[in-house]
Image (tube, rainbow, N blue to C red; front, side):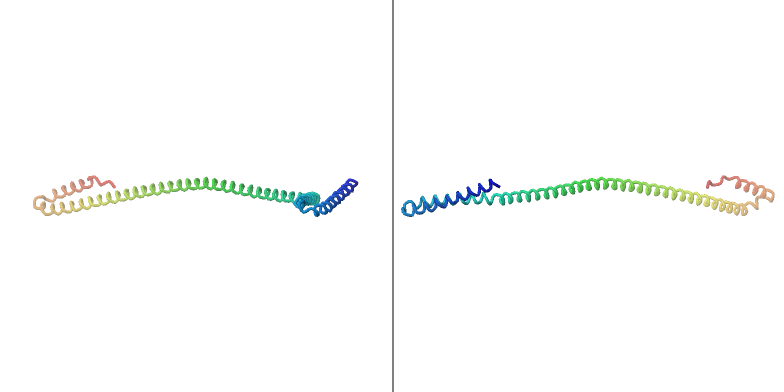
Length: 198
């Protein structure tokens, strides 16, 4: 407190001295017009020092507070931007991870689809082979049955023709006893004839 009073007193003495110098110089220089430019320069410097003193004395704290506020504001902005940057980097990393996971999942799905397609294709081929084999077997069986039927029909017709021919030609040459013997022989040969395999 005492230092503050001493400082105020010294400041008052300083301004009083400046005022006194100002008055003395103005009256001294006013009498001689050639000294007026020197007086103006001296007063300019005195006013400049007074202005600097006032700015330093009363403006230093607000100016420093202003600078500190600017510094804090810039620091806050930097912190906010750093947080935004970190958040964006985290999102980018998460997106990269999701893309890599999606690529792996896509490859797995693609591989599974290819395997399912190959299995389905092989099943279709196997089913087609089985159906064609069954169709061939059925057609073979039909052909064998038709051949056997044709043979039976041919044999029946042959028997009928032979019988008709025999009835036509043999009655005049063969008696009843020979006729019966031939008929028995013919029937036994027919019964012993190899049958068609079915």
